[in-house]
Amino acid sequence: MPFLFKNVFSTREKTSMMDLLHYFDPVDFEKFACPEWANKKHTLGYLLQRNQEKVKPEKADLVLIGVPEDRNSGVEGAAKAPDEIRKHLYNLNRIGARFKILDLGNLKVGNTANDSYFALRDICEHLMESRQTVCILGGSQDLTFGMSKAFDGRLFNMVTVDPKLDFKKGVKNITAENYLNLIFEKQKNMYSYTALGYQNYFVDQTDIDIFNSSHFDSKRLGQVRYDLTSVEPILRDANIFSFDINAIRYIDAPGQAMASPNGLYSEEACQIARYAGISDTLQLAGFFNLIPDNDMSSSSSNLVAQIIWHFIEGFYNRKPEDPTDDTEDFNHFVVDMADINIAIVFFQSRVSGRWWMEISDFEHKKGRMYIVPCDEDDYKKASQGDIPDRWWKNIRKMHKRQNK
Image (cartoon, rainbow, N blue to C red; front, side):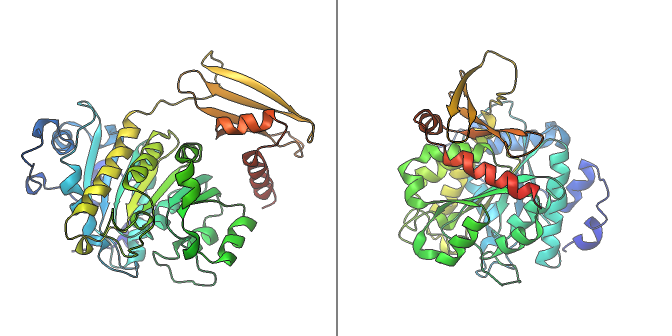
């Protein structure tokens, strides 16, 4: 029987973690059989089952939740995905024997899809307050709206992986094809948004113009494929990550709705997910639009499980770094830019090799400065006298924010 989340959660009252568990159907681990090729005691499913008994929910570092919601998807079937993903995810390597990861089970969806959005909002908000990262097994991608609502009142950055820009000008009813409309309209605290892997033949030029005028960023499939490492700095600065399985080519993932012959290769999808997991700023990740009924061989469910495993493995290997710390772990490079009469400061980690760039708002009276992730190409470009595009884009975003 579905819960009336509209009544339960709309008060925004503080609730304990144990109270939160009442809104989930717990995982029945016995129905997920371990195949002969796997060593059961070394599987993620076995670890999750043990952690369910030994790790208190508030002590978990990473929390998995299934959200079987697809009523606004346009193409139904994704509601069946969470348990299909678990069938394969649980058979994969546990990554670490003492990994504090929990699977809370499947959210008891509300009477309407809107109820589910706001239930997801409050659950994510509660878990983030406990400094926990949430991995969502969807469900359709319109659930990203519920994820974004968890950041009401504070700035956030969002990255999606999608073959299209899920935006339709003038359309008010939310679906998995236009959920960005509502996020752009309602979430005024979204500082930056980047769409990765879009395919230009699915996108109208007017939508690209809207993105450019709003200072949103995007990378076409070809740009992502040409330099996959270029997405790492983007994801390093993200708070929300939303992955649409339709971004993967059909031959690798037939359990989807679009069935496009072009798209990400499975290995590329896994690497992008790992970059998202490594990001120590990322708090919410969702994997959406898997349709098990279209997945006759279960290869798509298997692939999505492996993509999520790479996200989890990235999370487990996070190494938070702060270039503002007064340590000897960073190289500092100062590049004078004659065109704008300022110097751009770059930081390079001696541990991971990653780069950051200082953004100075020279037009602002208080001279605000921000540190943003970048890559070595930005440093090389500045060294040659060219102002990096990433610098200009961040300056424009800062000014847009100040003028609101």
